[in-house]
Length: 198
Length: 198
Figure 1 (tube, chains in turn purple, brown):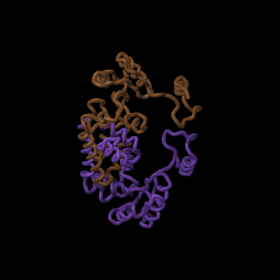
Figure 2 (cartoon, helix red, strand yellow):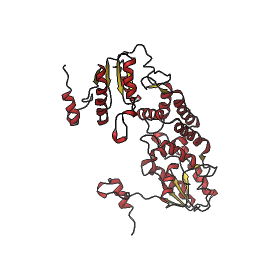
Figure 3 (cartoon, chains in turn yellow, green):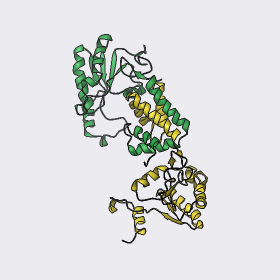
Figure 4 (cartoon, chains in turn green, purple):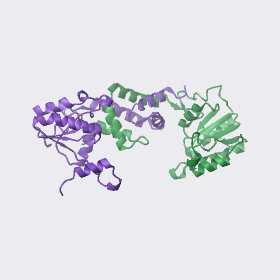
């Protein structure tokens, strides 16, 4: 046995995480071995607490301490707009901008036939059912600007429009601070067709 | 509070790990939130076990389950050669080659005045003391081929030679499978000066 078993166990568990391969896992495990025992204990406890104290909001599937998340239960939010995102991490990113004051809905991914993700794997049924229990006037689709995101956006638009709800999509175009000369054709193309009045 | 506290705690603890920044930590934490509770529990337990079941060998400072590591207590190893490495991870890398059957000594780093690492922070005293308790005929220096490693190698050679012990260094040269055309000058230079008879 080359690697001591307790070390191998940590390497195996760490390498199950996304973007962490065997070599990175080994480096992290060796680092933890040199770390103060209290720090490792704190990490282990934080991990256990994460799973026991947090859940997904029963309305929008955002991360939540309570049954209903902080955004869904905040009476000051605009309650007629839902922003549809792929993951709870996207909510954090949008909230940081302070540009949006409406509600959210976490799909849990995007349609991807190649990875076997169909509409039944996403929280689409749950989104549609919100239209009867809440007074929604607009759904903003904020999925990633890739093939899966585009496909899902079109699919969702087809489902939502019959309810008489406005469906919009966040703008695609040149990122702030970028250079037109070095942008890819698809992005420049989108930026031109999506031009707005000044 | 934008991010729920139990999630923020995991992000904070994970971002203390080397090469894991705030964004990666957040992605990993969100992934763990979606992971089965048993898998997270297994990771947490493996981390705690790591610190409680493993220690550093009192002879060579390799990772060990017992007081003396598996290599130091293996009677079949050649006991007259010590290979000096920076970290326990280097032992794993050398052992995988199956080219070396001697003992090891983990320094715990390399001399680096800029990072405040002096000879008193490394296990150099402990290496020297092994020369009186063990019959050593050769010390192989296998430190990283960078400035810190080179400096430390020269410093160690100066300390070891007075004991009448042969000091060698692992070869520097072109990596197997590489291309001379694309190798850097320093590496090619070392490969030429370090040429051997065929």
